[in-house]
Image (cartoon, rainbow, N blue to C red; front, side):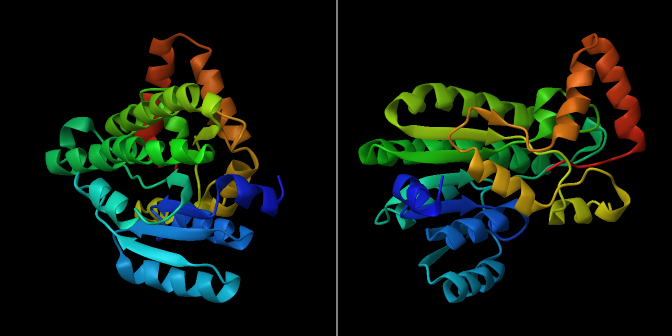
Length: 267
């Protein structure tokens, strides 16, 4: 799909959550390069303003900054209010994060915030924008999940569970909305060179088969109408396919051993 067709179908405005870094920032950059105006959503307003200034200068697009803490349930309503006058044709629900370690050692408040960001906010955000997309008769929704959604991953239990929720959410929305001309795609990246990976103390240079955010986003935008689910990393999809081909008990035992030794945070 060329840029003109893409803008006609999903423009004139795209909204991206988690836009301050990583995959979200790449979504904002590539969509602006296509000629879409963008709404940038994240907590760190200074980073959003810096990105907005660059996108305006490089691509001549309109950029709206919407600073919001997506761990607060009320954030979704504020985003919907702030964008009520914009013709948003593409909603990219990308914000998310997770923790590695024993489930019993996790801070309860941090777990609750993670589930709000990873599950509640995407659910409410899509619910809020669907009537607008239906009124347009065209558009799209992209949901960023993770390869870990395919299996309840030991030592990443809550995170993988939250991403499994997103896969089901995206599949259900794909079934509901594609007959109405609204494309829905859930992406399940493997290990990606993002700020989250570095914050966990992992140097991507020491790992194999790490994708860049730009690679993930390019594949996503090229396949937006090829839902319901996209696995950008052939390598990590093959690893999980192998695990899922053996008895579940054996797969979980193998993962528990591997995750305890090598704490890698995909997506």
